[in-house]
Length: 212
Image 1: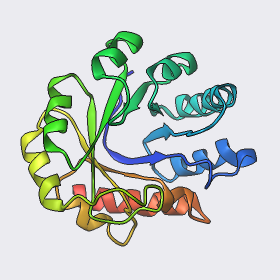
Image 2 (image 1 turned 135 degrees about the horizontal axis):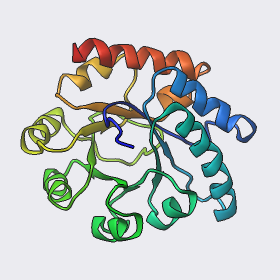
Image 3 (image 1 turned 90 degrees about the vertical axis):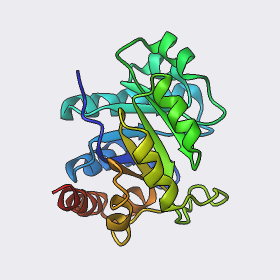
Image 4 (image 1 turned 60 degrees about the vertical axis):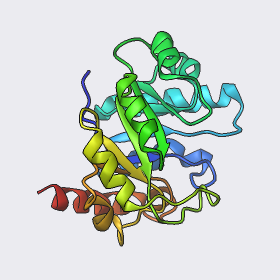
């Protein structure tokens, strides 16, 4: 299945989503307009990640959107997800492609490093993610990335989508989208909300308004 990689990209956080409502909470985000989900389960036992992942995968299949797993191509293959997202210290794009095949979605975190984004594009990534200047509680030590860097990345990286991440809320999403990014990735502003569906819908509405 070909997926449209743009819009609202939501990333799970076990500290924000109760285990007994994990799948239903992710579904609320999807109902609100999220069209990509990343399962990000740091420090969770392997068996538990697989169990949760397969439950969420069934959900994303029902809605026709992709599920991405953070960090591990091998875990992505075991669960059967649509792809993997790679950070600075994860395996290479080449390795991920060898494990997951030509059709898998491979995303790459670029932080504020334009060269990393260009290399990812040339190396066969399907999308890249750049940071913002905003503080984010999920990565409090993250170095801020100026919008000028994001704009330059958008100018130089032309064949794959670019997402912005880091402290994005309904209050600043419009400014982020003015950089020209294809979408925004969020954790807290949806899954830390008392109403994930309403929060996702508000962000989706802002994205649609900006994309014309």
